[in-house]
Image (tube, rainbow, N blue to C red):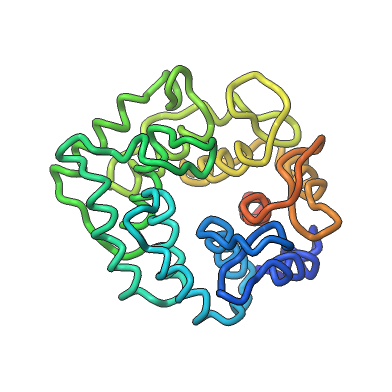
Length: 283
């Protein structure tokens, strides 16, 4: 995968960007001078190395780092990320120990969907579907199967956010629409007809809400992933590829928009994952 992507972006610079931000405890921090290693940056470092087909440096240290952060005070999004990261690293037994932490915060049968329990990956405070999306990712990688009644309750919860041809709180958004259909798919339910992503597509990226500007990396990532899940393709593949290429900063990482933004690990993984998906659309 790295060799294919290397025809479009500087993969060597990406790897240097990651390596400079790895710390002695096995964790990562996207600001190289700070030793504030955290689950989010470490998760995306692991995901990026894996996407590129690269060996993860000092893997055992990173396993120890993620496992040590499986604590009750962590938000459910962070716990789920740590579980997925541990599975990718091959530490499945350690990852399974994190399930009990999830169950304390997430109980669909009691109407407990971990809302308001802290950290969000996207917006600072958790969005209604975000915890469900991440919990189901964690369940999926460790092959935990919710009961039929739990699945039903989760589906009912997701459908309360249906807004026309997408999902959201007040209106459909690209992020929440992808999180919803990903969750429904993982649960084994048929994905409803979704037109939201096409309404957000412009020449060179996707927007969070329909018929708006400018495009940003995160809705582009979610829209492309969503179209892939639906078995559809974007209309402006080459223009989207050019956007991704233009988002790489001199330090090797990627920012979120053409106009502004510093590199971070989240943006870097999303840029490379999106580029990979777009190249697959061409096939």
